[in-house]
Length: 632
Image (cartoon, rainbow, N blue to C red; front, side, top):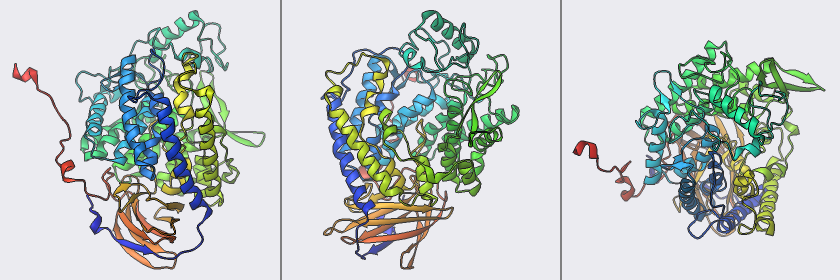
């Protein structure tokens, strides 16, 4: 643990014109502060529970209320109002209680759901540790949640250590959920009407059609029967997102068991892919074989190559797991090879339609179909981790990064989701020099749009119809105003995390050296303008004409990188040789720095640059009750 007195310092005194991006950045931070607190107050009761319906069936949706407020803490760690982190923690606890009453959450974790949704629910929980790694509740919950998958909880049967499988696509605190009931999928029926049939042999249905009549009870009954026969048991690639939970646990105390579990689980999927001729299979039986319940087919599993989303829910878990493994091994890039191989495999099957290059998105019994433009976010995250030009080529093949559109439209259906990862990549690679001003103004416009929406009579929490449809479970994430893409991209120098459970992989993060809190100090703006395999170029500006500020720069979200030296715009080079550097900014001062960085030189940790208070040091990792069995 590093204490602040040993951290090198440099000073900035040069005063000049304040850049437009700096003014916009601070305006966006303030706008999100105020609107998010107002949003939280509008949609919660006095006890922080959500103003919503009195009952909620099935196993869908516990992730959605968490998503509506998860960005509060991420905003705080970038320099937002501390009250947002406090409110997020209060609301997280209240949601956990409320969804326990609904019957979905058991022992503070979803009883039974898939890892696309577990991952979404856990994003905000992961960010608590970036805000303060010394909260006992967070540490103990992390160990408890991880034990659901590492096999340490003897009462929960999610993990088979012999075959190295998570035993069902639907899993959680209730263990492997093999049998799907009429109630389980009830809330999903309306939503799933918009997707192709989950099985090719569904009676009377064209397997390639874009809609499925889940409302028809006869069809629904047949779907449930086939789910229980073919999809309910065994492992699927989306379960690799569980490595994010084990990685989260590792970064608290560096317990090797979490690293070992992550690496062995990823290795198991690498072996299955090799066994399948280089294509990752999407369904593994409880016996460890490929296609056990699917007539030996390597396709056709839950969140697999065919249904419901196709390649997205194959590639993203591979990207998340590979990035986690790189973190845990301090930069062993071979762990990205599995996702690279699948990106390359799809690219080999590309076609050209009207001058546009497309890759297959789904595999049916008849072969590869549903050709689409390559999804950029997965190879961008891979490149962001590796800084390898071969990975940059994977991003850019068949795509012109300079033509990316910046729009507020995408935020309407989920304002917490990333929309402009490809545009950020275009900027950081030098193709879109005006990106900072454009994305900041875009996010300001989007937040103002959200404010108008949640203040409107249509979205009055006491009068709007919470029972109107299953989609009302998404209201909070649709309305929330904490739109953070611009701030993550520009201040931290990285993409938004993979939405379904990825960690924050960025070039730098900041701390207020005076207040000893995470985030940029008041009136300080930051811009990361270039990243290479061994450098980060950034600018800090103090827009206050009267108040000096001290900013602490950390290399990486988890201090995983090491700053070797810092060279300012005049060519003065300062040795650092640590994960942190303090920059003292005079009123109105601006400084541009080139940081020489040794990437992944350090074990990732949630510990920041300030030693915790002595009372925090003495707090135990876990609190345990009496062992009545041993007493008897």
